[in-house]
Image 1 (cartoon, helix red, strand yellow):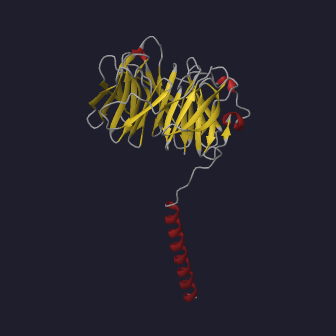
Image 2 (cartoon, helix red, strand yellow; image 1 turned 180 degrees about the vertical axis):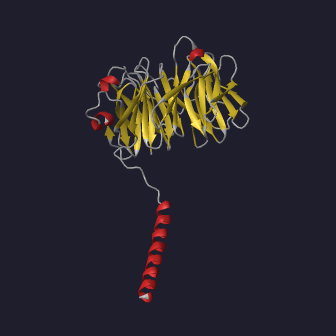
Image 3 (cartoon, helix red, strand yellow; image 1 turned 30 degrees about the horizontal axis):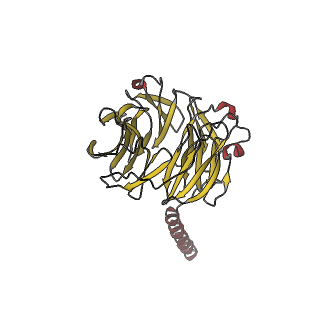
Length: 355
């Protein structure tokens, strides 16, 4: 009897040991996202909604899905979304689509595109969004004629309740890095600052870029925030040391360049666009090139270079077209060779990589 009891204990201990080892092994396993749209990128269609495709999906295998949201959500009432779909952003498991005219944010599963909910409180002409922890932050124009009334809507992602935070400045593009939120205080020639929002306190810190230097795009790289501005005369690239929250460099663009926009930084190379042309220069360059890498043909009156991105050694361009019918996006190599042409929905305005 004692022998049987001891044998049982030995077997139990052995089983526990193997179970413990299995648990530790499981902790080291990286679970890859699963879903039809786990690998590839979305092209947001600004004039989607109201029956049109909200986003186009291009898989890593090259397969294009014209309307993944409509395909998956056959009972979803797209007439409630509004138009002017301004931005798409992600957390670990969800995709958020901002509708400017609908004053709402649509929430979907990031990898399956199944509809989750709609957040429709505390918005007034929402623009761009980002996520830090359990909260999403969405900029709002409010009254277009008054920059100082812009604000940020803060969405609690646990229950989708909302609060607001006054920016007391223009609030346009927004991004997050290392637990802080950065807001570009400028659009269409108004505003000349960048605001840093600390989510732990909701405190705001403003960094002045000087009169007339309106930020239109920015990127964070290795502890520095790079801000591209334009003042209707020429463009400039500002470098902000995020440890000190101060401007440490300013690179003025030649007047011949004109209105530069769409700043992207990839592998220590700066990319930007002017009209239908793409330019590049080393991140540490002190002079700005006046010759582009390449340009593309467009007959769009208002949608030339309407969307732009650089990712994994590929340049992506979206052309707005006529904003009433399907349009086109392009993939180029870094030296300007056309790799792929994609039919999109109406008014493609941005690329969002889901990998």
